[in-house]
Image 1 (tube, rainbow, N blue to C red):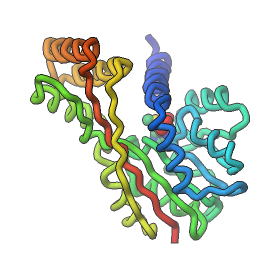
Image 2 (cartoon, rainbow, N blue to C red):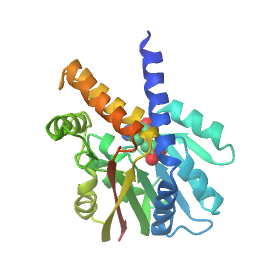
Image 3 (cartoon, protein in one colour):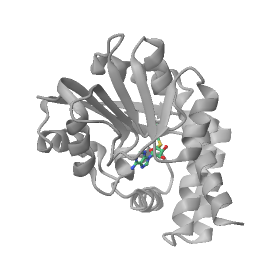
Image 4 (tube, rainbow, N blue to C red):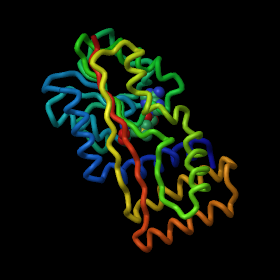
Length: 254
Ligand SMILES: C[S@@+](CC[C@H](N)C(=O)[O-])C[C@H]1O[C@@H](n2cnc3c(N)ncnc32)[C@H](O)[C@@H]1O
């Protein structure tokens, strides 16, 4: 398999996971909360950084906001354009935003900062492009606070911590507030919304976690198989329980 097709399937897998999570009413409510926190009015210029398949940029545009979705992955941008032909999208790096100083009124980034090796640089860039009184909203999960019920809590802890360690900045979300303060933002606030998942549709996501950790060598194949067998049994008997805290932080550019 070529490197390009491997990358493509990684993007497709990510899209499947995001689609499954975004389909939940609680996810839609959280997106609406983020738009309210942006205080975006018709005509405001707002970017959704790391926009993925573009849902938030499209929903902001539907509110009359001049929104632009930006993503480093050109396949994500192609999919965003295909899904939302009336919204605007562009390939761009969170660390080098294609705007002059103070050009924008809003900056939003959902489930993005944990991917960035240099989060302070990304927030300095956010501050640069925002006008005075511009708003920033960050949302995302803290990869070290996943909760999965299991009869083998030690193995579960090993799996979840190993999965977290595969992420460049697994604990970025608990640091949003501090990062915004360090970047010189004002009126910084934060909250947490914990999603609860009991649907068997979560099983492929759980299996993906175990597979990634197995591939990284943190557990044996026997441990992976036993853990997935237990989670599958739970799913069949309506005993699956996953809780995922989503952190939200917002601030004003002084
Ligand atoms: C987990 S996805 C989240 C997508 C979308 N924000 C959502 O919540 O559905 C993370 C996205 O960030 C993008 N990304 C990663 N590093 C980036 C960077 N340096 N600049 C812009 N986008 C980036 C990825 O390509 C991916 O689409």
